[in-house]
Each structure stands twice: as structure tokens, then as C-alpha cells.
Length: 66
Ligand SMILES: [Zn+2]
Image (cartoon, rainbow, N blue to C red):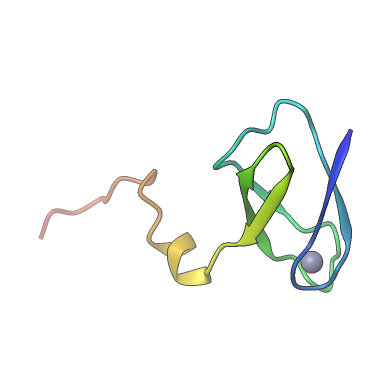
């Protein structure tokens, strides 16, 4: 299993082989709990997902149309 270091708390996180680019992983450190997005597989890299982006998730369709 590959590992990536959390940019926020430096915790090493295991990333399973099936987790591809653009997938999200949550930091294993309970005090950090930051959501990270896999930006690269080779080499394995992750960046912090801003909270605003989590709320405005394009995968979640809006319930109302105004
Ligand atoms: Zn972290």
C-alpha cells in the first residue's frame, strides 16, 4: 500500500490501490480529519480540499430549482 503525507498534520496516510486521481480521502488523524483529494498517482500526491468546495459538491444534485 502506498502512503501520502497529510499536508496539514504530516500524518502518513495509506492509500489503497483502487483509489484513483480525484478521489477523496480523509486524514486518519482524528485531530486533523482534513479531506484530501488525490491529485497524482505516480508519484502519489494529495492536496487539501477547501471546506467550501465540500459543501458545493458537484456530485450532489440540488433539491430545489428556485
Ligand atoms: Zn492530517
